[in-house]
Amino acid sequence: MRWLSGLRWLIGALGLLVACTARDHPYVRLKGEGESAVVAPERAPGRLPLRVAVAPVISPRATFEIYSPLLDYLAHRLDRPVELLQRPTYAEINDLIRTGQADVGFVCGGAFVEGEREGYMELLVVPQINGTTTYHALIIVPADSPFHRLEDLRGRRFAFTDPLSNSGRLYVQYRLAQMGETSESFFQNTFFTYSHDNSIRAVAQGLADGASVDSLVYEWLSHNEPNLITRVRVIERSPPFGIPPVVVHPELNSGLKEALREAFLKMHEDPRGQKALTMLRVERFVLPAPGAYEDIRRMAAKVRGWP
Image 1 (tube, helix red, strand yellow):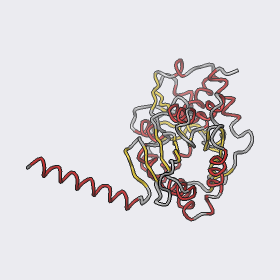
Image 2 (cartoon, one colour):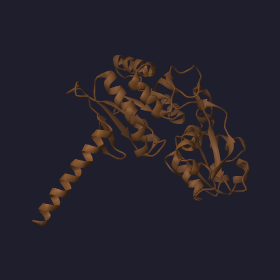
Image 3 (cartoon, helix red, strand yellow):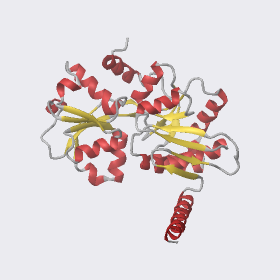
Image 4 (spheres, helix red, strand yellow):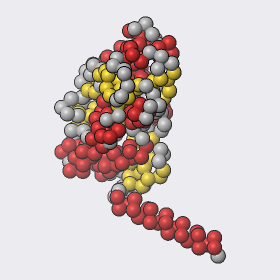
């Protein structure tokens, strides 16, 4: 009887959890952190879900909270269920696009030029933030450290975000290559944190003497966790790069591709879309400018030895 009573308590607790989740996100069902969330409007029964992959720029839970209104908007706009796919690394997100397991992806510039070069990634739209479609890599150090230049970090511990990250790795690799160095020859040791907020925390907590991070994530944390940002200091800001884009596979169904592009481009005109944009801290989505990612391509070619 004791185990039966415990079972009833567990069922009740799960029911309360589901009810709370449903109230917070009426069209969203969270299947598990790091796995997926499903948005399923009642008026689209039986339709295959639109699969949206998001690179791990920030933690899985924060990604779910930030992207849920966008999933809700896309579900209603396209009249079909929407599934959010999260994976631990940029390479795994790229692989979802490459293999057709995801229909659309939010990726970083470094991951995009990799997928573009291998022929499985195509630009769809890009976000516009504060009137621009660019962002920066920021090299940061602990606020109380004596370091003021990248050169000061020779022989120190450095945190990279992801092997395919532009702002979180490629930019620093390129800077070191200009100095005739590699990360192996210059730093004492390096490690990957697999999200920009994790890199910032690693520096703030003294686990790393420096890191290179996405300026958009840094600014987001300056609003949401200002006490964290006060514990780090920016010592270098890169030139502007093309902002992390929204991509699809070139062979994605043309009708779906155009429907997605239109949904993103008109998001700012829709009340549900405006809510999603506010959560993303994006003004609107626009078409990418020609040559927007040429600097990232050039850096990747030098660092990765591309012809």
